[in-house]
Image: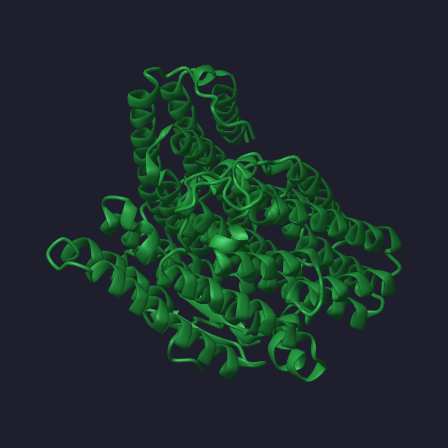
Length: 512
Length: 112
C-alpha cells in the first residue's frame, strides 16, 4: 500500500491555485513553486517506481469501501505501468520547468503559465492514476483544457489558429469518449475499470462490445494523434512555447492517449483478434505515414511533431503485436517482449523528443527563427545545444549506444519472433528514413554554412536551459541500461506483467 | 428506443454543423449541440419508467427509483463543457481581433 498516491494529484493542483493567488504579490514565487512541486513529484514517483514492483496499491478517495465487493467510490490505482508513466511525467515536467525559467522570461503573465503548467501535470497524473473510466475523462479534460490555453500562450495568429483546430478536434474526441462511457455504464452498471471487466466477462453482446471499443479507440486515438486523426498535432505542437511542446509531444499524447488505450484494451476489455488487428494497423500506418510527412518539413518544430506521430506508431504497433499474439493464444513470451519493447520505446521517446523540442526552443531563442533554411553553422556558436541535439538525433534514429536503438531492436526482434516479417521490415525502413530526416536537421541547423554568414553575435542560451538539455541527454544515454536483462526485469517487467496477466488487475482491485 | 435515436440525430446535427459551417461562432454552437446530445444520452440511461427521485422513503420502500449516478455524471460533464466552451469563445474573440473576421476560410496560415 503506497501512502503517497493522493499527493500526485493534490500537490500540483494546490500549486496551481497558490500560484494564482500568491504569485502576484510575491515575485519569483511562480518559478520556484513550480520547480519545487515538480522536484517533489519526481522524488515520490521514483520512490513509487522502486517500491511498487509487482504490487497494486489502491487508494479509495473519501474512504468509501466496497459494498458486497462492488467498488462504489473513486479509486486511484498505482501499479507498475502507471508508476512508469508517473516517472516520465514528473521527469520531463521538471526539465521543462527548469528550462522555462529562462525561456518564459520573454513572455508576459508568467503566473498564468506556471499555474496552467501545474494544472496540466495534475490532470495527467490523475489520468494515469485513475481507476475508473469517468475520472479518466474528468482528468483528461483538466489536462487538455490547460493545454489548449498553453498552446495559445503566444496569442499571435498562428497560435490561435492551432489552438482552435486542437480545441474543435479535442472536443469531438471528448464527446466520443463521453458517449462510450455512457454505453459502458448502460450495460455494465458500473464505471470502475476492474469492475467493468468482471461485469463484461459474465457475458456480453459482441456487437455492442465492438461499438464501445470503436468509440473509445477513435476518441483516445484523436487525443493520441494516431494517423487518421493526426491533423491537429503538427500545428498545436509547433505553435506552443517550446517547453510546452516538449511536454505535449513528450508526455501529453502518451499519458492521455497511448496509456489510456493500452490500459483499457488490456485491462478493461478482453483482447479480441479483430481489435488487435485494428490497433496494429493504426500503429503501422502512423509509423509509416508520419515519417513521410516529416521528411518534407522545413520548420524544425513541425518536423519534430510529425516524428512524434511516427514514433508513437512504433509503440502502438508493438503493443498491437503483443495483443495479436495474446489473442491467438500462442507464444506469450514473445508477446511480453513486444509489449515491453513498446513501453520501453514510450519512455525513450519522452526523453529524446523532449530534448529535441528543448533544442529547437534554444535555437529559436538565440536566432529567432524556426526555418531550417535560414540557419546554419550553429555548431561553433552553440556547442552545447549542438552536442545535445546530436545525441537526441542519434537516439531517435536508433544508433547505439543511445536508448532508441535498444527499444527499436526489441520491437523488431519481437516482430520477427512473432513471424510479422513485414512489420519488422517496415520498422527498420522507417528507422532509416528517420535517420535521413535528422541528418538533414543536423546539417542545415548546425554544420551547413561557413562561419560568419550569420550574424556573429549568436550566443549560447542561459544556464537553466543548458542544464535541462544536458540532463535530458544524459537520461537518453542512461535509459539504454534498461535493455540489460537484470535491469529490465525490475523496471519493465512489472508493467508488462500487469498488462499480460488478464485477470490480475481486476482481481487485485475488486478483491476477488 | 425512439428517444435514443432522436438523441443520436441531435449529435449528427451538431457534427453536420461543425463540418459545414464557415462561421466560427456557429461552429462553437454546433459543438455545444453535440455536447448536449451526449449529456442527454447520459441522462436517458439513468431514466427508469415510472421511477421517482432516488431518496429512500422508509414508509414506502417498494418504489422504483431512477438511477442517480448518470445525473451526477451529467452535472460534472456540464461543468467541464462550460469550461471548454468558455475557452473556445475566448479563442474565437482573440481570433476576431487578430484576423478581423469569423470566416474560417480566411484563417488559413497553417496547413496541417
